[in-house]
Image 1 (tube, one colour):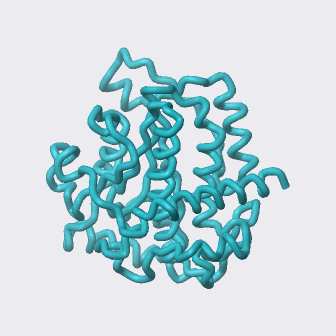
Image 2 (cartoon, helix red, strand yellow):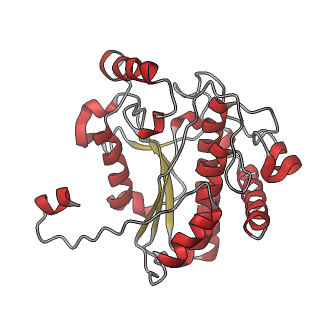
Length: 286
């Protein structure tokens, strides 16, 4: 906030600290009922929170309601927050921005490394309810859980836009990948020595990593750009290392791109939505 005021002295800026733990449905509900109690005309909402377990982790950790922690936070937490906050978003001009990732696509450079994202037939959700280990019904895989959660984010974006269009709200929702940014809290559970070496290699040697400035700029672009506001249901990304082009890359190198084959499955998007809605209803009323 101080940085904004230093550049724009007459800016009307108010920062309201609040707690919203996406791994706890009660915390989400409390955030909306208290912090946003009097707010009914939100211009933009960004679903940007996320966690990534150590890729070597073998234990399936869980949210307060029992969901596998990674998908439970990155998908179910945002899904529940959206259920509560949607009526507070401005009709016609409101915007929703979802932070996804290119790793949702097993054919992308990042998605092709290690375990591949796939939700299968959603067997885990159907068979095990909120006690699933993996959405596809397989045994817990920390690396895949993160990639699956990003696939859920893309499917959520596309299905939410379909529903918003059907209801005639005029609200637009898009998702994006900020790129590989190693120097953030997202990597806090990884081996610190590996993370440091990987950061240097990805950013300085291989030139595929991005800066925090670039990542923040992608989110800013998604929020403010009028072209983004004109159409929903899209996924924005850029080729690895596009940060070298600077701010001019937004809208050029950083632009709408095709999502993975599985992310284009509209029937799966609807089924994931319906199962998520059902499981959250049962968990929030338990």
